[in-house]
Amino acid sequence: MIDDAGKMKAKSKPVGKMQMKKYKGQVTAEFLIILIALLGVLLFAYGASYNFKKAELSFENMLQGKSIAYRVARTVNEVYFAGDGTEAKVFIDSGYTLEATPNILVVEKEKRIIGDFPLATMNVTVMTTSFGKYASVRNIDGVVYIS
Image (cartoon, rainbow, N blue to C red; front, side, top):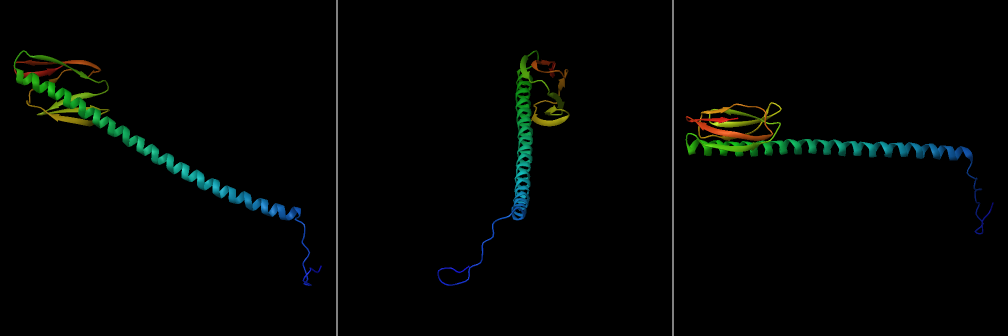
């Protein structure tokens, strides 16, 4: 076939079924590669958000433990300094345990230390481990009891 300029022009071939299948398979492979890449990005983002949430909960538990340790230790110190026969109440959330080591009140959750606060006395006895209610803090003969 000759065009207007007098040059030979190649015949255009109609697109056949064989060529369509070739292109169709290539598009499918490219689509799968893009889909796998997107799934990889989504899985990475999910993993990162899961780790962030886990760290956030751990930080929240630590803050809660420090808050409980502060409240209880402050009450223990006030009762100790007020003298023999003094009694006060303090709320201790459920799920936490208290331990009075020499001059330090330790708060634990699931057997992990999550908070502590200094005490004015070494004579502190924790008499209960079941909280979630108001605990009584009493000074009897210079020994402070938490029950």
